[in-house]
Amino acid sequence: MKNPPVSSSGSRFAFLDNLRIYLTILVILHHTALAFGGSGSWTVDDPNADLLSEVVFTFFNAVNQTYFMSLFFLMAGYFTPRSLEKKGPRSYLLDRLIRLGIPILVYTTLIINLNEYIVRVRYMGLPMAWRLEYDPGHLWFLQALLLFAVIYVIYRLIIYKDTSASRWHVYLDRFPPDRVLVVCIVILSVLTFLVRLAAPIGEWFFGLQLAHFSHYIFCFFVGILAYRGEWFSKLQRPQAKHWGIVALVTIPFFFVLLIAGGVLEGEEQLAKFMGGPTWQSFALSIWETILLFAISIFLLYFFRERINMRTPLLAVMATSVYTVYIIHQTIVTWVDTWFIPLDLHMFVKFAGVSLISIPLCFALAYLILKIPGVKRVVG
Image 1 (cartoon, rainbow, N blue to C red):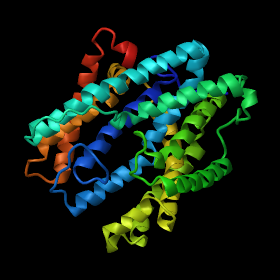
Image 2: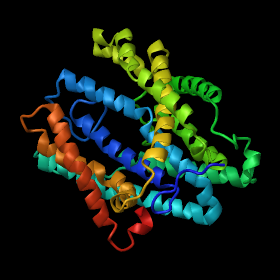
Image 3: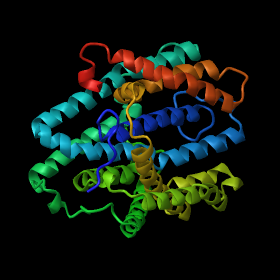
């Protein structure tokens, strides 16, 4: 069995740390795009966004949405069995409650009101309106991981106690072949479409956007299987290259789907893509699912082979990504409010906010982690 290349620091998971850094930066860019024309909700938005910026940023975010959060769930699933077996059920759940529950508590009580102050008082000149409600905001991801952790522990304690890889009936000698991946794409596309009949894109239930959760649940479970079968080390170049080509071919079909779906006839046609018994919703589900597989497989191989190293800077950034994810909304919102009033093109504003927010988030995260006791929670 061929193991993944070892980084200069001796860690065989350096490429996964670097992939997390990339995905975290992409989260910042994704949310920055929302303020300047991207489709979706954000704390502030620029009223001067033009058609070009709306098209470009909506496309950018649509592609991101197909894989970036799903890859976070995949990696979370990958390290879950290892953590549970090392700590035991009680200590594992306590650790999850501390590392996931405390940030949610801090966000729903403090950070959410800091965001309100930035937007209402400093930016809009309105009186402060304190928010006393449970709203995990972008930390829905942590809420979902906590739920998944509890379900997985129950599953392991009650249903499946055997930890041997041979009993999991997964591919132990190779990465799953393309024919299996295609079958998974078909099944997952149908499931995504069916979920969106009841929960369209944009609708939230207890802080969760269920329209995307068929992908998230699938990736978390696949991450567990990938750990058992050591799939990340067995993915080969020809298969990764094929899926990279599939991604390049599939991405432009976004515009084909929108035009064929009648978006040029009026924005009301866009709702047909969000969910319901429409061919547009089914087609978007297929497009998203194909890209989930294609981009994820390519990125896993690319980072393993090309970015599997740990420099001092990357090590600091890898340690900070969790904190950056938690605090980035506040930083990006604050920088947004400085750029929105400026007489600049949306692309220039996007670039400016991104170039300031990304290093600022990582620098602030680095300082926060210096506070005694903080590393126990987010380190």
